[in-house]
Every structure is written in C-alpha cells, then in structure tokens.
Length: 289
Image 1 (cartoon, rainbow, N blue to C red):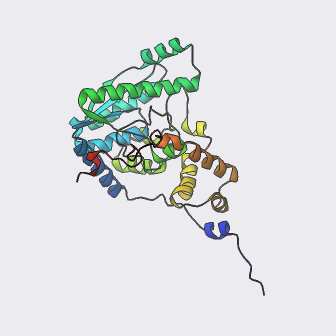
Image 2 (cartoon, rainbow, N blue to C red):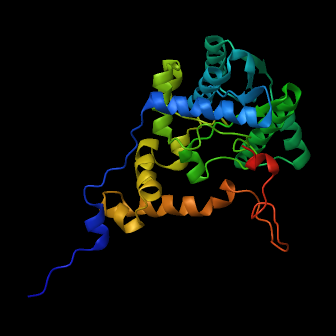
Image 3 (cartoon, one colour):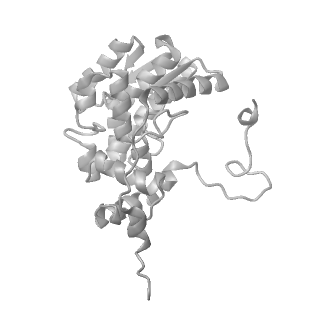
C-alpha cells in the first residue's frame, strides 16, 4: 500500500507562529550594555542622535540615557519647513523628560538650496535629500562633541530597505537594528516613553500626512510576523503561504528583502590582493580584548 505524502511546505508550516516575544528588562539591559561597550572601545564620551518625535528615536534616546547618563547624550531636532509641529513637540517632550543635551537645527536652507541648484527634484528624491541633510548635521555635531552617531533604524526597516542610504541609515552604532517595529513598541512601553509618541501612526515626516504603512502598503504588525518566519525561522515562501500569509504579500516582502541587500552592507570592494578591506582584513581595534 502506498503511503500518502504531504507537501513539505504545508507539513512544516502548519501551526507555526512567529516568535516576536521578548523580555523587555533583559533586552534593555543588553542594549544599554552594548552602547556603553561601543563607546569604551572607541574612547568617545558621548552619543549624538536625531530626535524625530517618533517612537524609534525616542526609544534610542531613552536607552542611551540609561546607558550613559543625560550629560552624555546629545539630541538634535532637525525639522524641515513642512515638518509637523506635533513631531517637534513630541521630540521636545523626550528631551524634557530625559534632561539630555539638545539642539534644534532647521534644515530648510540646506534642502531648499540643493533643490534650487538641481532644478526642482521630485518628492521622493527630496525626501532623500532631507535624510542626507540630517545626516550631515548629525556627523558634524558628532565631531564637535567627540561623539558617536547613534542609529535609530529598526530591524523591519533594515530588512525592507525602508530608509535612505547615507541618510537615516547612517550611524556608528545602532541599538535597535535587531528589534522589529512591534518589539520596539514593547520596549517603548517598558521604558515609559510618552503615550502620545507610542500611539501615533509611524511616519518619517518627509511631507504632510506621510505615513510609513501607507508607503509600504501593509501594517508593521503583519509584516513583522511574516519577516520573523522568513528571516528568523528560515521558512521559504511556500511555507509562509501555508502558514496563512497571502502569496502576493510573501512575494513582495521577499523581493524587498533581496533587492535592498546593498543597503545593509558596506560597498563591495573588488579583491585583488591577499588582504582586502571588508573581506579578510580587520582594523587592530576589532581584535583587541
């Protein structure tokens, strides 16, 4: 008698649930230790970060303050002329709650000057210019304060490529890069980030009424569950479909992850010698105990 065979994807995926649970206290302890360790390694006394008024940068600021103390955290509020006043107020509420050093710098002159010089760029390109203008100011101030730039991009954004290369993706260290957006929300609640920041719809605030989820075409809750299966559980596309996700969503998200790989790694260097930067060469600081 012949035995029936089940499809591998279906048999391996039925009942599979993405694991996004974390211990917030333990996670905060790990991340604050990470920040302290990296500053000790580089012998820098401070961090600089951009505060947008959103949940990611707020959580990064709270973590840095816990790790280093308020005198070692410099927050920059970097609005453009079309930025939401509410976002600026939310950023200022974090500064007030933490007692950290802060500066407000309007990037409108930088961005508008570029726009005029290049002959009116479209909205998407202008958004990239804003992100890179903020990066320029952050790195300038990091030099002024002898600080490291603290990144605020979460794992969802990094995997989907939802960010500007050499803009908001640029940093010296990133405590949020291995946390999905929904996990950042859990950490925000644990750290008691203001409720107004935790509850508002996520937005890069690049233009009026801009929304992350509208840009992406799906919710963070949905895509985080899918990414946890594809990336962390290492399921293939068929298994993700068998687990209950629409094929169109699975295919689109998988394509975004693959096509944005160039944003997650340094520029590829052609190897012509025995010791190549980025391949098999490490700077001495990296192997010192």
